[in-house]
Length: 289
Image (cartoon, rainbow, N blue to C red; front, top):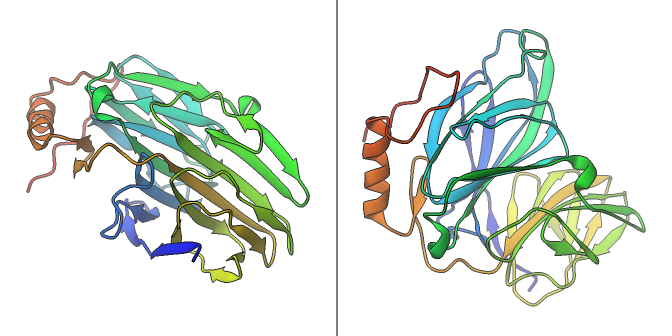
């Protein structure tokens, strides 16, 4: 059978009317390839008085991967990076031994109605890279390879597919695709990595004849080449890669193969030893247990 597991996820309120649907980590599967965290936020109409700013907060042992369909956000981090994040671009922030960042509504969108919609993923770093130096990489939409097939458009956000390779650098085999499929058309997903999942963003999809409901993520059996059919115009994401080198501990914004390392990160953040975002004075305290 092509589908091995179905993840239904759960909703989480981030405040200001912004609900996210979270699929990873899950009880049935902690990660798919390197991806250990998967949030789908929106689409939502943002009211002029809404506040979706995320104050400075830390990460270790992972890379954040931000991808927007609508809206924009301003990224700032403790390396001194400033980047406006817009639809179609891939923004990869390697936390490594530790980084602090904020995400705020751009000034031109503050106080005016707008829409926001996107995916927020985390990729766990291989154990040998968990303590790497932090870094930030922005790949604009213009540099993302686009493959046009019969009735389908595939954006190769990360990794290689359909003869094209994304310029986004990774630490292990990683795949991330954004696929738009016209009504009634079929696409074959061949040459997939050992671990892979499909997530419908909009529209009606079937995988080898099995209907895939919105707000579900399906894990695929290894070694297959599933046929994905759109009942109506549809869009979906494909994520995956080689399996992680062992399980991870996850606590708040920290990911590590070591529970002691996570405890130390919490102590460092509470003592404000992880760096500051230039120009920012606020910060999110470590959650109490």
